[in-house]
Every structure is written in structure tokens, then in C-alpha cells.
Length: 366
Ligand SMILES: Nc1nc2c(ncn2[C@@H]2O[C@H](COP(=O)(O)OP(=O)(O)O)[C@@H](O)[C@H]2O)c(=O)[nH]1
Ligand SMILES: [Mg+2]
Image (cartoon, rainbow, N blue to C red; front, side, top):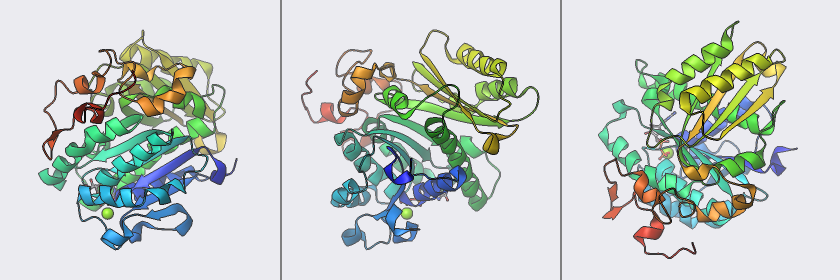
């Protein structure tokens, strides 16, 4: 299938988000349907795969850290976005919170995707501590909105993702490469399945109402690579960032022709043992000798919402009814309660931890 007609679209939002998306495209090395969306004209590497938003408002010079300006810019340009979404059924959105565009425009884009019945998986970085409290506050201010607007959201703290000592430029570059590597593994898992298939439809059903999740991946070599992969994942800080218990697990095992059944078993058993043996577990493989040749990569996604486990019939409606249906806490309370252990996110006088439909008293047809 050519990239242009793929039902899966990679969307990079903001300057860093666009950079990450291009990194994924390079790492994937093949046809990958991509769209970079930014308020800054400098992010446009090629016209066909770029959408400049808020041109009238911001003159292509970026949002200057203003989340609200970026949201308005995205709203202005929503019909241009529609033009880029033909045939798309699953969007993977990469973005970096802490600036203006990544934080603001992402929310509007996600809402539009949902309105069109397109499921969305978001990978959003949160800033390094060295970037300062303002950027961290800006990121925290939008996280719950991003979570609410997406089908599934993975927040990746840059400090935990790439660790400390680098200078800023090196750290940023490493972060781009690392995230691009992880998203590429996920992309391969869906687009190039091996013995065990995890195709876009199954993924879509799994993420339909998944809410917040945790994401980690490792690549290892050597005779004990399966055990080592499990060990490293179980100890991974990225999988330790919990906001709620795990309710479903998705695991991808990517390797060359030398992938043994016993290795698959070791990975599956190890991950289930560590994160929950009683909860739904999906595994998929990719067998690609040219790419992996001797290496073994394992991707783990832990979903924290009970709604992550959807039946096929529920999948279609899921994109439009997120947050409302199938809450373990009863209708209308799921998202609000998810944050009960955290400080409330008050932004412009609104408690953003409450879903929009509760804040605005909108009645849902439950
Ligand atoms: N991974 C990565 N993150 C970056 C890079 N540049 C900036 N960031 C992060 O992205 C956040 C948003 O910055 P930026 O993309 O410039 O803002 P935006 O264009 O307004 O969305 C920053 O707070 C950083 O945490 C980069 O080159 N790589
Ligand atoms: Mg920018």
C-alpha cells in the first residue's frame, strides 16, 4: 500500500513535534504517511506534507509560547486539516508540550480527529527540568486536555526518557532520536506484522477509549536477549509513571528471522508477570531480517483505563464517546476521578481535570 492511501497517518505538531515526526519517517525508511503541522513556517520540509496553521494570525513565525494563540491558529485552519485526512482511520500524533504550538494546536487537532471518527494515539513529551518551571507549568496545564481529547495518550518525560548529563542541544537531539525510534517500532508493528498480527483495526479497537498509558521500548542483542529485554522493561522508569492501575497490556516483539518461539514466550510471560497476569494482553510480532538482524526490540504499552478493552462493535462509536462510556466508576465520572490523587489543574478558572462535557454541563446520551 502506498503511503498516500494508508489508513494510518503520523502527525507532528509544533516545532519539536514536527522534528520528531520527520525523525520517525527517516528511521522507518519507507513509505510513511506524514503531516507536520506548525505555526512556524520553518518546520515545512516539503509542501505536500506540511500544514502551516494560523498564517493570518501569526504570520508563520510561531506561537511564541502562547498555547491559546496556537489553539486559535489551529481552529482557523481546521478545514485545511480536513483536506489532509482523507481515508485516515488512525492518527499517531507526536508533540512536545512546554511551548505554544505543541500544547495548544494538538488539542484542537485531536478534537477534530475525534469529530471525524478518527482514533488518535498521542505521544507527547514533557519538558526537561532544566527548561524551567514555566515550561513545565505550561505542559501540565494541557496534559489533561490532551488526554481527554485523544483516544490514547502517552506522556514521555524527557528527563526520564534520555537522562541527565548532556548539554541541552545534545539532550534534545537524543530525545528526538529516542522517541522517533520508539514510534517507529510501534509503526512497524502495525504496518509490517509478522507471525502474530496486530493490525490497525485491532490497535484501533484497543486504543478506542484507552485514556492515559505508559510506553517503553528496548533493543537488545545476545543469547539472553529476551530475558534482558524483560529485565530492562520491568525496571524502566517510563513504565513506573503510574496515574492509575494497569488495565490492559499491548506488547510488540520485533526481530529478524532468528526470533525463537521460546523468546516470545519469555517476553510475554515476563511482562504479564510484572504488570498483571489477569488483565487483557495483546501481543504482536514483526519479523524483518533487514532491519533487526540479530537484534530484538520489545515495545510495551500499558493502558490505565478499563475502557481500553473494547469489543469490535464498540470500536466505531468509541472515538466519539470517549470518557463517557464504560467507566469503571459509573457513567460520567471516569475522567474526573482519574485525577483524584493529583493536584487539580486550574487553567483560566476552569478545573481541567474535569472532562469538557462535565465542565460545560453537556448531556451525553449514555
Ligand atoms: N525532543 C525534542 N524536544 C524539543 C526540541 N526542541 C524543543 N523541544 C521540547 O519541546 C518543547 C516545545 O518546544 P517547541 O517545539 O519549540 O515549541 P512549539 O513549536 O511552540 O510547540 C520544549 O519545551 C522542549 O521540551 C527538540 O529539538 N527535540
Ligand atoms: Mg515552534
